[in-house]
Length: 187
Image 1: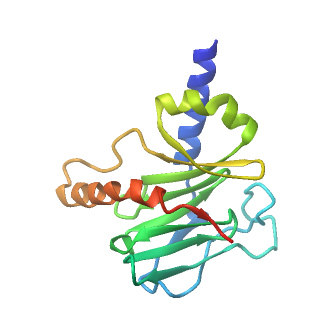
Image 2: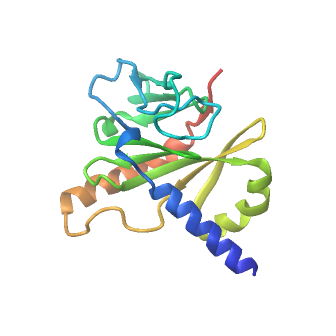
């Protein structure tokens, strides 16, 4: 019974990580100092239901930092920042889903690089350790009653016959551990 629950949980997580709609994609522009906005109509305190709210979407800004050659990704909805390598500029989209967001490789529209997911403390304490044994997931932060995790896909996200795409994705993949270490809550 425990294995069935775990398998069901893994399936739910994988489905939620792969869920993507055209309406909630944030395209990264080459002008990194310009403020950009997620295309969602959902206030930060409600679940994602596209098109039902008149509250302005959360702002996301990207500003290069000279000392680290990175872009600061700021998410006001979930109150955190990450440093993304400058080499990623223009190569990824951020896709919001019901429980977090995914960083997606643009060349392969559904090629997830990594996901940040929010869990309740109760759900994480119940399922997190077991889930971490089966998929690539790490706790990266905790604020109030939420646990923030970063996970990477467990399957191939690009066509292996496309050597350029495979090399580009592999190069970005190598940066993820470093990105994970830059996670901070906004002050």
